[in-house]
Length: 139
Image (cartoon, rainbow, N blue to C red; front, side, top):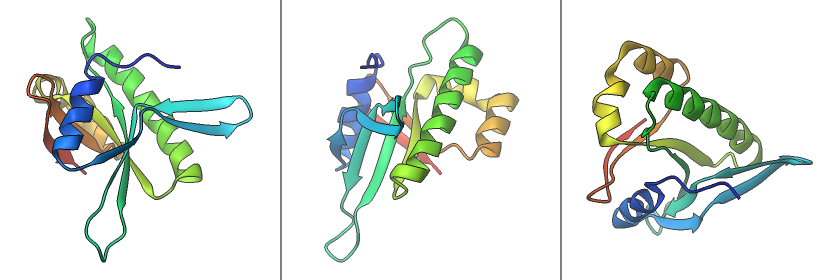
């Protein structure tokens, strides 16, 4: 089993505050024989009695290492692979990359991350790890 990110529980509690039900912790998928992935969280939110439930998967990143660019390369690679697996095995679930507010306000405003996020259509959840809150959803 993969190690939990430092802010895993903060993001989980932030989602629960927004009335999401965490259904998988982690969300385990088997793409092919011996090809397993574990996405940090799977969650659902009922939109109303007459509407179908909304499902998401969340890959949580802390961006605490010395190189934010290196962290981003790893996060983007995981995101793209996980999205591919979800498209085939659980196409109703939308994948988000969860990033801390401080990283979003600094690193993610630089030109390369902005261009990469746009090009690869990365959906982002910005979270405050101290307040355990979701600050922003970026589709």
